[in-house]
Image (cartoon, rainbow, N blue to C red; front, side, top):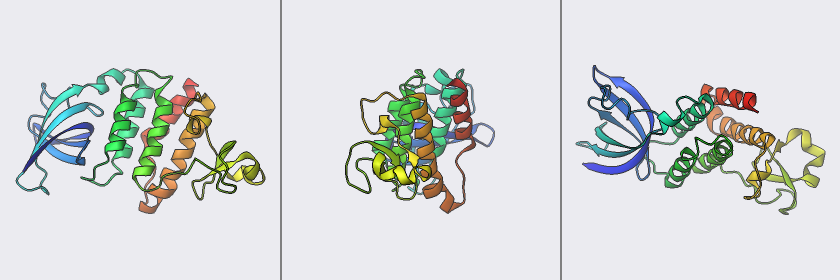
Length: 240
């Protein structure tokens, strides 16, 4: 059997002397592995870089087999961020976190958001806030979406500035005042689409998504957030 799709390269590992096993996040198939013959050669090495957007053809005798990929580069995002350590750490973090998705389970919406963020990786004033939104979308796809539209206590949608670390629901300023030391900050750019993300907002946004990724997704499987994500936050802090 065979299929064709577009995908984002998540990881590449050597196989034998000249081949490579490539992991893609595809639009229609989801996360999928395949063998690339000659993947370690000079011609394909620039293509097989984490974060690159490619056209893929997969062929295998049975669907459960590893199969073989033929890949053609659409856009080389890896090369565009290679000299910028913060953007490179951001791209690597998204690739690592995408691997939390089940294999061969399509998530077309998350794929679209991923591509959208990649398109702004050369603009440091934009992509960090977009990446926070991507992490929220990842939580949604994993079944742990947050409810940031109305206060969990009153049902109102005014002055939402907190998130409950237990329920993942927004809390208004008045309802959260007695418990504010135990609540997470809700950045306003996540509430209002037109709000500008400040440096404090971006830090609060990553703290918010990081909390739920760790407690809801990773802790139950006895794993931690990727080390590259911590490195990313350190780079952002220094830049700020």
